[in-house]
Structure formats: C-alpha cells, structure tokens
Length: 79
Image (tube, rainbow, N blue to C red):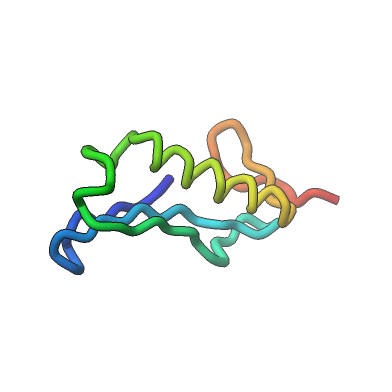
C-alpha cells in the first residue's frame, strides 16, 4: 500500500509515501517522493511513480528480512 497527499498539507505540493517493514512485519520507516504538482503525475493513484515507490519500499523491507504472504500480510521472519 501507499499514501498520497494532493495538496492537503501544502498547496500545490504532492507526495507519495510507502511503508518499510522489518522482519516481523512492523512498519519502521517510510520512503516518500514529493514535488510540485506540475511535476508529479496526475492521477497519483496507480501511477508509475507510486508503483515504483511501493516496489522500492518492498525491496528495502526484503533486505531487512520482511517476507509478505500472497495476501500481503506479514509472515514468519526469514531465518
């Protein structure tokens, strides 16, 4: 999953954020991409940029030992 901000916090600024999980599945950090609305995709939801943010966060999570089940729920840690 990911979160978006379409000018709610700061007018004309858009943001995409995705969670980073540890080996137990707990969210421990996030990555985000922010920029002026003129340089961010419209719509943000489902955009290549949003998908890249989610993929990057998942890769970092995997490096920390996180393993997702097919439904996306946390599973047992990697040993």
